[in-house]
Image (tube, rainbow, N blue to C red):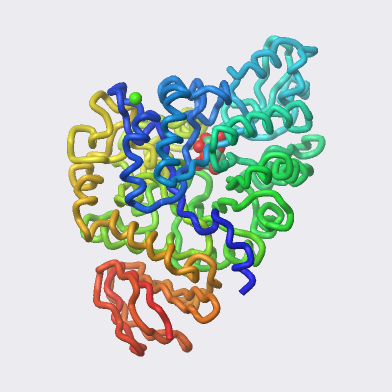
Length: 558
Ligand code: ISL
Ligand code: CA
């Protein structure tokens, strides 16, 4: 089996994403912080994860919750000090946990020293660190749009030129064409690697090389500019240099946020023979039911087809991630499961089974292990996110979309669903803070919290723990070939994972009704290995199964 040729550590790891602002507040100011994370390392170790991905912890004015960095070598004051960071890393090392940090280098904050200099004059030595152009007859240099609303260009009065920003105006894009920019970035990466971090999650990394000549987007591209932004002519040259000069010498793990990367282009980023990234995040699953800001519907055959395409895109020499949530998405159980109290626990466990049995490195988002749900947002003033504010400005305030319509979509799609604080206990504010949380805690923390689940062997938390343990013991669940054996079934997801003579099948009923199911040819059960407790598992040789609502079982096959 060729896939086994590359049994590198990061393929076998399970990653847990911490959004520091919302994880655990140690000093009562309502904002999660680094000492708060250190205090919960035993909880994470007991869950069994290997790697923690920390969303940005750098000095930032927080126009986009840290995805706008003012100083790459300083810790955000609200989160603590460099000494707190060193203690967190030491605590992780003691427990055999690795840390990857968030590398946000497509853009900086406009308050970064480089940009403060750059905007001063056309001949400032830092001018060329960013992308400045003259306007076109009093309008922006081209028709690029920002993901947070409006033009991607901002006219800076000091010099009369425009700078490019794919995200907020406070997030100017760096000019990677400039060799000094690349040298600075490679240096700051080494700064953190020398401290002992194990690698990086790379924010919108395919965007770093800008389209040659910055021509207008064709009308058809305007709705999804990411597919143009992600295909700049030099992106692979830059990533290969980064790999050669920075990542490889440290054996560092890298995971690229491949926003805008199509399936065909995936191997260009992750084929191990090219020396670029370890793995990428595809957005085709979390965006299956989205048309920009609009929520649409998804079907199970569509979801299954997407899993297959993602697996095939990685091929033999590439590698994938498996995730259903992150800090930019609604909650896993509300999005793909059923957060009705009658079905929440079963469906959250079923989705954990799905996520943790892919041929990919699983990424769990904080609170997923508890089945945390979307927040019941009602009004615009309950949201914090810069993206929501941009949508409100460009759609509602301009009169294009009625307020009630946008609110109905946001209630299902907003990034703030994932950003409400971790629910540690049934205490006030879910035990997240003794003060006033920066974003309200979900009122369901009385039911859904870590304290109650750690003490309950049948909880969603313990189901995650058992799945992680099983994955560690069974190489076929990590490296084995992935095959969807019934792509058309509207309610049952069945796939096999095969490595040499080890054969497994995963069966998941994606619905509230019982399904009378005949196993496809060639799938012969030997024994149930791990089940989510929703129903009765099948015996060896049984071919007709009665699948209970949201039942999810891993079987060893004959
Ligand atoms: O979440 C999105 C829209 O709903 C995406 O467009 C998102 O902005 C995109 O996936 C890029 O995300 C990353 O970069 C952004 C930051 O706001 C996100 O939090 C980050 O994950 C800019 O740094
Ligand atoms: Ca705090």
